[in-house]
Image 1 (cartoon, rainbow, N blue to C red):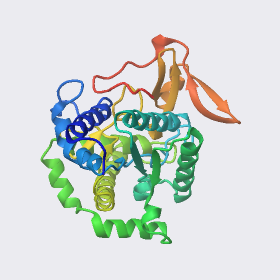
Image 2 (cartoon, helix red, strand yellow):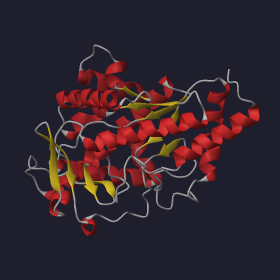
Image 3 (tube, rainbow, N blue to C red):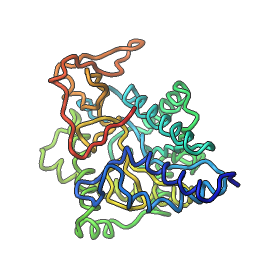
Image 4 (cartoon, rainbow, N blue to C red):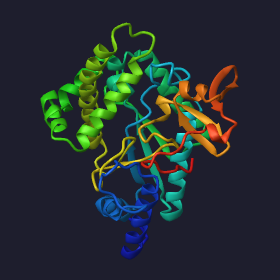
Length: 331
């Protein structure tokens, strides 16, 4: 049990949620107001307060860090690089700030969903494994005691990768028709579908695609539903496994829902992630850009041990401007 009094716990819980919401990734016109949305604070207050009353660490679940985009115009390769390292450092620092508010601290469980849908992206299972191993190595290198990785391999130990995906879908996935009805109704599901479709189109429009643009668009619209279907299944499984955790998301979220959208890096695109772009050092700090855009802006690659890890853009006027949906990360 916690040594804090009930009023102390209430205040600490509010401050912890406010700290997380400082980096909130919001849907445009999603309903949130103010720099820190009080409605979102109230929505998650009971869960965080209950954890504190028991004296446990505040637990967050973040489905993220799946695998690198297969499009070489967006990323530097198949392994994590400085883009992921900066994001992991930010998450670990966020937990350290929470520990200053609430001494038992917090843990962010990174639930990598790469194995969940990599076959839909044309990414090899070997590359997913290598990426996950790289994330674990980065966590160890930065000394991230508040970060843990959890994957589909931890759920279905010993099973084949395709069997893992089949068992996940059979047990937890909604039907495609259910998802289509949600998207047709508009709102957040439609925004999610459009965002996933856009990413699929970018990811699959690399040199390996030899068909027409319109054929690729049709394929990506179909694949987007399958990605959402499996992601929803993964989310339902995580809810079952970690019922007291606060759910984080790398996607913008509407106001006062069960997920808190969190911005992992400073970027002009609220949908861009470390595994869909590259880290670019500018005079104003690090930002995320797509590889081709960074190179077009004149950014130069930086190599460590013979491997490119990020870019440097020396002129501030070439750096991208921030979108109105972005929040600045303290990574």
